[in-house]
Image (cartoon, rainbow, N blue to C red; front, top):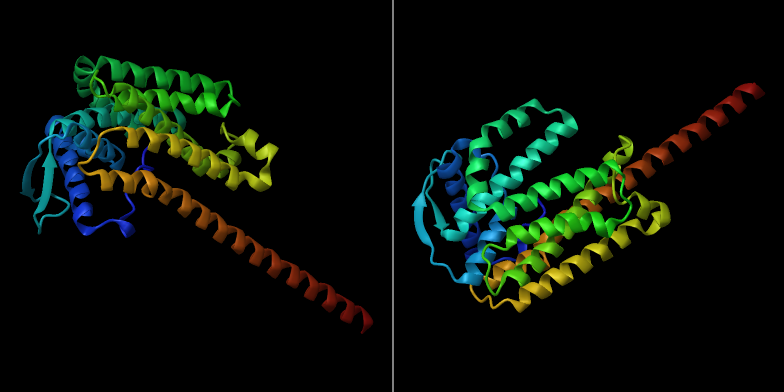
Length: 305
């Protein structure tokens, strides 16, 4: 469920790109300080969005520094860290932990099971700090597994499970912004779930595994891509509405870049890849057809002789 919430660097100013990267590096630092090197292995850009969102909403003051790291040992990089970074780092661990467990169940990936085991102590620590959020993630995993086992065909219902979970994660504090943050997270969660199902559809079909978009394909195979785009657009439209209702001025341009453009980068990439594969398949088919024609013509000439 990671990898869909990112920036579009092509249309972002260099200043904003550096700010976003600094929050990303700050999240990396916090994961290391709270969980060690194993925590850094869980780093993703999705939670960086949450850091910037909460920083902008609550106008948090950053601690800034220039640091070097193992990945970039020759050049110092700016980092930005605040209270939202600490929170996002903890949520990153909880979500990644369950993602590892899910991968273990699906593929029997022993390395991921071992990494999840190493996070047991951190998981218990975070559970003590944020029981509401952790329970929401646990309930999401349980209900999602149940839905997949039953091969749930109601896409809205099963995508809503991710939405409910992410809504609780986005709701950092029980204050006047809780409902709007939950709503924003809810629709972003549904967007992520549908995008993930869209990306995995062909692989799931080959392995005869559950995919919530199967019914959509059966009902309208020719319009599958268009319908998926419409569904995703609807989810992000509601997400953006919640964002615009929040009184965010700080880093608003960065957040709009993500919500209005960045989140579509993966979808556009998948469409382009699909188009290229289809064109390649057509060329192969055309070549084979031409070869069969040549073979038939050759046989006829041989028979005449």
